[in-house]
Image 1 (cartoon, protein in one colour):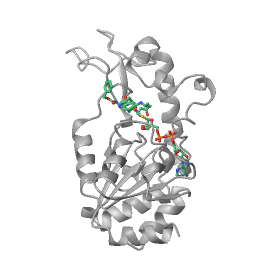
Image 2: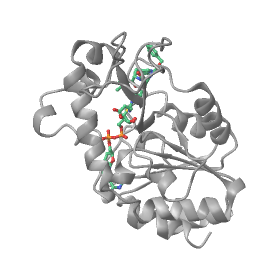
Image 3: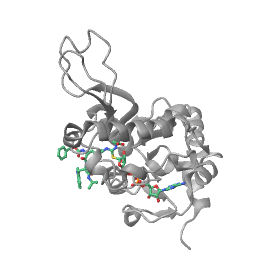
Length: 245
Ligand code: BV8
């Protein structure tokens, strides 16, 4: 009999350390469209890798800025769901037994009360300068526009996210790898597992002998290394798995 949610709940209760990797699916029940679903309306004809790259931004700054502005608007109405809250409660109760790593840029794990969430791909709510700022750039507020720019040198503001082809923040990646190296259970929640190096963390957990549990209503690239796949929405599954631990 393949192990089911009851076994995973027992594994979580006994685990010395749990690593969790989340993707857009953990925020779906908060009304935040998943990455592929974020390509609706105006942006439906684009491949995410066409929009979420530096070269796309330099070629079409207005189009890419508008896409991020659209996602920010959607996010402004979103609240953490029962999945985010279950992880936050577990982290507050057992701070040394959880490493929470997210690919999400929506800040909902942090909003649920998990400030030490490791955000591998940055934050949608923070901007920075596209090119290294000159004295002029920080001597006056950016000039409003789509995108805002430095009124003197024209440097563009850009979303504080990690674009395809860009390195992840080294400290975040190192902290994630350290948490995965010491976990005996890894929960892979709401991710299609197609983007690296984030997806590689699940392989690392599997290789070091941890039990890997995929929580996703659909099949994913990572099912083949999973000990168990729970075909459930995360806002239902995570409270069940973690609340007794
Ligand atoms: C890099 C921020 C070094 C921006 C993002 C190795 C092999 C192949 C390719 C590569 C490789 N190494 C590097 C690459 C290239 C590339 C990559 O991985 N390409 C893939 C796509 C082929 N990686 C990079 O470029 C990374 N940088 O490697 O730098 C380097 C430098 C130079 C040259 C080479 C390498 C940077 C990657 C980060 C990109 N930024 N986000 C933004 O948000 O705009 S990635 C972005 O897409 C998200 O952050 C996330 O990571 C990914 C989306 O995936 P998911 O979150 O999984 O979302 P998705 O929509 O796909 O799936 C949702 C899932 O939820 C589904 O499975 C669904 O069934 C499920 N679901 C739905 N509802 C629920 C649910 N689950 C549970 N409950 C529910 N209710």
